[in-house]
Structures are given as C-alpha cells and as structure tokens.
Image (tube, helix red, strand yellow):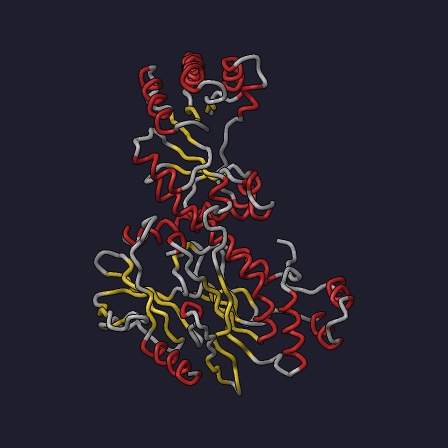
Length: 475
C-alpha cells in the first residue's frame, strides 16, 4: 500500500499543532472507532478493512515534500513542522478481527497513543474501516438472501473509483461472495475470479449461434453463454442448447447460461425446463442485472430457477445505504499518569458516547454455541469466572437477564503495541471462512433483512455507573 499519511483532513493537523503548542504532545489519549445504526441494513455489520489499517499505520511517515507543502500553507508553527519530520506511531491499537460481526456503538478499533498520534489516525482509519465494513455488510445481506446459492461480485465498473473497486471486492469476499470479476483483486488477495462474455461478443458475430460456437471453441471447458442479447427463449436458449450438444459430442460438458435482463423469475423457470428437456439438468443458470438482497429474496420467493447470482452496482456502492456512519471519538485522556474518562454529550441520546478505556466481550451459550449478548465494559473488569452474570438494557434498565452456562471471549485483540505490529493478518480466504463461522453463531432473527430482532449490547454496571455519573456532573 502506498503512503497515505497526507490523506487526512486539515483539522487533524491543526489540532496536532495546537496540542504541541499547549504542551499536550506526550499526553496519551484513548479513541474508539464505532458506527451508529442507520436503518435495518446496519442492525449488524461485518468488520473489514483492518489489513489496510495495518499497512497504513506501518507506513506513517511525513516526507520532506509533505512538510514543505504544509509549510506553504502558512498556518503551521515551525516547531510543529519539525515535529512532523520525525513522526512515528508509538502507541497501541486493538481491533476486532476482520469478519467479526459487530453492532452499533461497539468499538471496532481502539487506539491508545500520545494524543497527537491518535488524532492523526482518525480520518484514514474511518475511511478504511467505514468503506470495507459497509461493503462486507451489504455482501453478507446479499449472500443471506441467496440462501445457499453462490454469489459473485461483479461491481468494478460501477465502483466509485479504483480503490473502491479493489477493496470493495475484497470486502465482498469477506461478506460471503465466492468470487469476483475484478482480476486485480484476485491477483492481490489470491481469491477466485469469474466471468463470461458480454452482449458485445454476440453482436460482433454475424449471428448468435456463430457467436456461441466461437466462444465454446475458445473455452470448451468453461462454456457459459449469455442468452438474452436478442430473444432469450426464442433463440438464446435454443442456440445455447445446440452448442451444448456439440460440446458434448466432443466429450465436454457446458457450465450453463446467463440471464441479464427481463423477468428473471419467468425466464429462468422456462430456461430450466428447456435445459432439462434437452438433457442438461446440470447446466447452471446464472443471473445478473441490478440485483440486491431485496430483489434476490423476491425472485427466490417467486420460484426463480437461478443457481448463481452475479451482483454488481447495488452491492459495490451499497446503493440503498451508501455510508456506514462510523465515527472516532475520544473516550479517555491521561492526566498525571492516570486515564480520565471523557464523554461527548448531545441533545440526541444516540450521540452520547461511552466513556473510559473499554473492552468488548461476547457471551455464548455453552450448549448451542450461539451468541447470547455483548457487554461493553471497562478495561479492568474480568468476566472469565463463568459465574452467573446479570446484564441489563442500558436504555430500559428494567429489562434484565442472567447469563448462565456460558463461554466468553474478548473481541478486541492487540494489533500494535508500543508502535510495533504484534498481529499477523490472515489470508483473505481465512478471513472469509471466519466470517461465515461468525454469522453462524447468531440466530436468524438477528439477521433478518427487514425489522431484525435487536441483539443485546449492554454496558457493565461499572461502565453504566461511570457514564451516568459524568452525565449528572454535566447536568
């Protein structure tokens, strides 16, 4: 990854200049990166982007050219510009592993570092985590709606630029897609790539049958034909069957056909009958064309005979919810060697932050392996004893339950310690496998596309009391 040090908002640098002038440069601070819910799509999220965060932090360096550019703005102190020439990240970063299912207000990343260092990370961490987590979550919803069918990512041409195409495809694999059309993503991250031909291939030949025969001649072991250029049922499928028979005579079997337009439920059912009657029950029917989780869900409900779904624009751009809503907030600041909690207060209760240096715990039913609840707690708290634990809803405190016969794990794991990387990023295929296991630990009602049941994310008693004591002081 290239050096992204200067990919930041100006106000991160102006605050850093101010911290230095007021002698705060050595004060350590704790920041939490989390997201706020925006509708049903982000009732849960699939964390992604950590590998790129690691590369960003490893490469944090201000070049002489960078410093001279900042000097040309005539707004920074010379002492600050000199500080930047020696800048290195020396702090601690904890994060949930990529592929972890997370919920609103839960820390995805926790940074503890001298406040100038921690402040600089804000913009780029949000950029990297917000985007990939958004696309991974969208992909997970699409895969869920396909109910066991294969889903391929086809969005590169509609992505918001090269990086969004590359890393959006990466995130879609984490979310559950089995392949991508993006060759560069396949090369960079060693994941399967897939694709067939476009309508232009068919149109470039004298007729459809000639085009199909030519494609089968070039790719006899991977013959997948796009059948909707002229007349799907009148010529496309019949011509494909003709070519499939010719392939079989050569000892080859076709992959199948692709539908890209029209009434996909009707066309796929009719095409399935035609393929079966012609002796090709194993030929797959692929579908593409402005698909998303809602469209796929409806097509499945209508009995569409589709085996594989190619999803592009609506997934790579997360068209119906184009921003995750992640934020990066100060949670504690060191004073005389002791971390003091900090809280942001708002007239909007959803924007009141959780103070202090925190850890995130997930509790599982020992019998079923399913997730029971998450608990956001202060760093010094310990829940490893396995003793019965009463938790309560932080908004409606009368809603309580006692956890028994559970296992528990910390979700935030060390990534950097004292500026040194202590974490090994898994291969993308391993992250995707982990993400699938993660999704399986949640009951279906928490993953509904519409009006999902609310998963329990509670505060420990100590954190709850701390938060409300700070609110009372401000009252």
